[in-house]
Image (cartoon, rainbow, N blue to C red; front, side, top):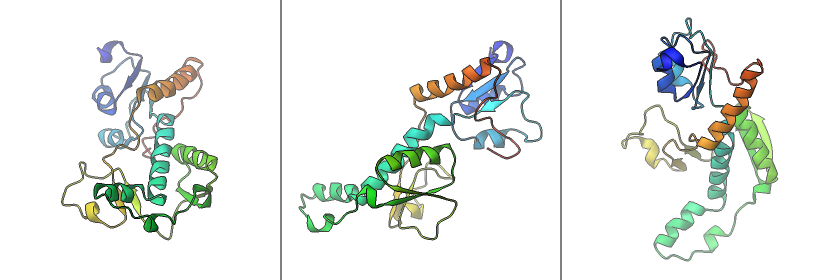
Length: 206
């Protein structure tokens, strides 16, 4: 049983929540998820577990960057629109010949966390200009992947809002090889007695 014998636990958030108050030997719990909202909700911030819980920080950086880059390309090169044209066997060259190269774009990143930094490095490779900022004064469209209520209700106006693309919370899934790599890096720090990366701060909520 985890509660009686585990020193280190690598698990999804629900498992960690289940054993947080009963795992007497546990010295470290590593979540396979990047988000910590469910952990924060389930535990008293004033009485967090007596062992550190880490989130899977770096495991999602590259997949999130690829997701964003993919939809930038989809928007700039009209990939979704062209797929719809193909469904009706429509040859419409004039509407889709005026596009921008990635090197013509300035990509703004709201927040400069691990994912934002990885994205900036990825886009810089394609010669995009990067701007790290915390707010934007305009929005030409949106790709939305995470919602307060999931699945997103069919009655939600977001489904038909012009310029909005909906994806079903798949931008950054837990890929086993990336989770293993991230856990290995933290496990090596643990064995050396070094501070763990991505420790959840229950008072700050992340």
